[in-house]
Length: 191
Image 1 (cartoon, one colour):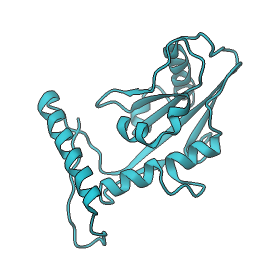
Image 2 (cartoon, rainbow, N blue to C red; image 1 turned 135 degrees about the vertical axis):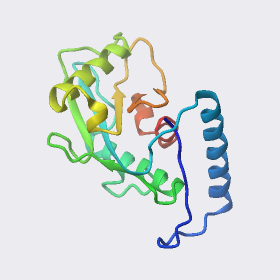
Image 3 (spheres, rainbow, N blue to C red; image 1 turned 60 degrees about the horizontal axis):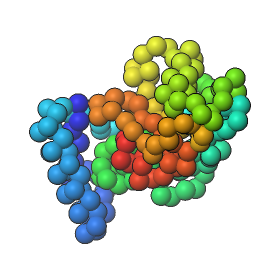
Image 4 (cartoon, rainbow, N blue to C red; image 1 turned 60 degrees about the vertical axis):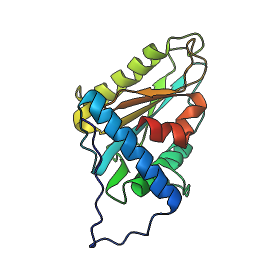
């Protein structure tokens, strides 16, 4: 389900949006309306969105960002002011927050996955994605959608079928390749 609603609640202080922000909001509403017409779906998307970013390390490769840097570019935990959390908060006029999961084993919203028994070079991206999901399920249970609102998997470089990023419309999962995991535009597009 995919629906994002904005309200101008006078109980909360919001800056007046710039022309660019108004234009982006108009584009967002146009795309949302088109998606709702074509899919008939709505998305529960307000409030705190429990989010985990998966950092993968294989025998020969790893996500190009450190755990700390991934946390910063997604959540702004170490001073990055232009990050996914701040952008979604601004676009939703403070009604939606990308919140880093604080579950045990997660570091500032990032879950490190050790797949050093696997090789990224020449591997199928889906095999690495599924191995990372298996590690998450082993740790947090089978129904990841009940634990997290967003799971962002960062596939390390070297796979035989490179890509930029992808996600399914009403699913919790989004997947990013290499440097694209740190791309704000890719993150916003997929989330």
